[in-house]
Image (cartoon, rainbow, N blue to C red; front, side, top):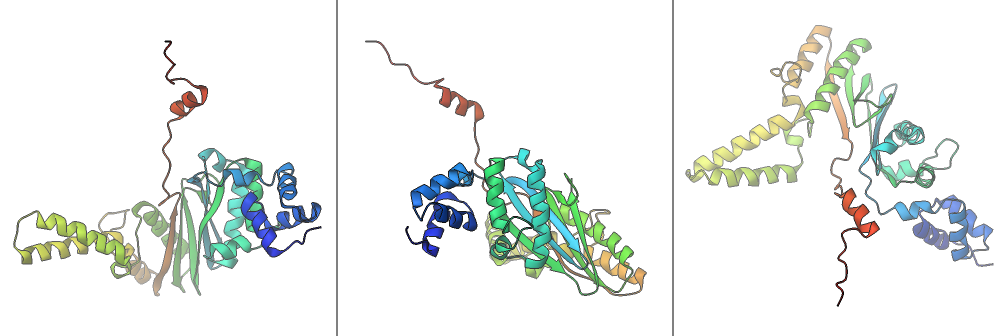
Amino acid sequence: MAEITVATVKELRERTGAGMMDCKKALGETGGDMEAAIDWLRTKGLAAAAKKAGRVAAEGLIGVAVVGTIGAAVEVNSETDFVAKNDQFQDFVRNTAQIALATGADVGELSRAQYPGHGTVAEMLTHNIATIGENQSLRRAARIEVGDGVVVPYVHNAVAPGLGKIGVLVALESKADKGELETLGKQLAMHIAAANPLAMRGEDLDAELVERERSIAQEKAAESGKPADIVAKMVEGALGKFRKENALLSQLFVMDNKTRIEDVITAEAKRLGTEVTLNGFVRFQLGEGIERKESDFAAEVAAASGVGKAEPVAS
C-alpha cells in the first residue's frame, strides 16, 4: 500500500477537482493508488467537476443575509442562468451568505468553513458542480456591521428572498428608532442599486481609476486647442465631476434627482432628533468584471455535425 500523504491528497484534488475529504477517502479505498483513486472518484460522480473547471461561470446569484447588526453578501457564479433557478444552487448561495456573517470577506476562509451537514463550503460546492453538471465558483464575499443601528439588505429583482442579480447592504449607525432607520436604509439601498456608486467619498475612489479618467480628460481637453492653463482647468473640472457623480455621498438622490445623499441623511437625522451616520455600504452586481465568452450556438452545432465543411473535389 502506497503512503497517503498531504502531497498525494493535494495532487488528487488538483487532478479531479474533488473535495479534500473525498480525495483522502478515495486514496484510502484504493491503497494509495493515484489512478485507481481517480477512477473511484469518477464512479462516485465526484471527479466530474474537473472537466467543467475551465468553463466561464458568469451567471449565478448574489446572496445577502442580515442577522442583528451584521450583514453579509456573496457572489456564486454558474455557467448559465438556468442554474440560478435550481433549488439546490439557491440553497447553497443562501446558506453560504449566512456562513459569511461569521467568516467575513475572505473567500479562502469562507471556503474552508463548515457547511451544515456537508463538510466544508468548498466541498459542498464541488458536490454541486458534480450533481448539477455545471461549473460553479464562489467568487467573492463581503461583511458589514454597526455597533448601534441597522444593516439593511436589498436585492433588486429578487428571484427568491435574499437572492438576485444585484445585492446591496447599507450600514446606518444611530440611536434612532430602528424602524425609521430601516426605511431610510431601504431608500439608500435602492439608490445604490440604481446609481452604482464606486466609493463613499470622492477621495476614496480608486487611484488607478481616477488616473485613467485624468488621461481621458487630458486627451479630450487637449483637442480643444486652448492654452495649457485652460486645459489644466478643464481636466480638473472633469475630474471633479467624475468624483461627484461616482461618490455616494455627493450623488443626487434618485428619488428626486436634486438632493445630495449626504443632505438626505442630514435631513433625516434632524427629523429623528439624533445623529445618523452612514458607516458603509456593499453593492454586488452579478458577473461584473468577468469576461464572458461569446459563442455562436448555430456555428457550434454545424461544426459538430460537419455542416458547412468543404467537400473534397473529385478528380
